Length: 57
Image (cartoon, rainbow, N blue to C red; front, side, top):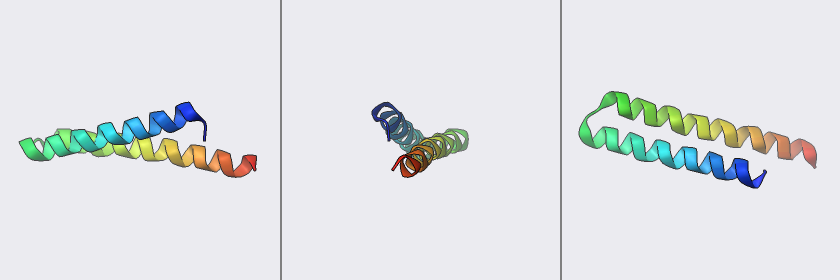
């Protein structure tokens, strides 16, 4: 996985976790949902890069 894409994926996942946790603490369902969506985008980005790495080797 390329270093930049790996960093972006981890940052997106961390941002999503923080946003979801803050949403749960404040009772804001929309923020919680947005956090879960951000986590999913990070997971997707990481999976895409993992697949690319598999085919490179």
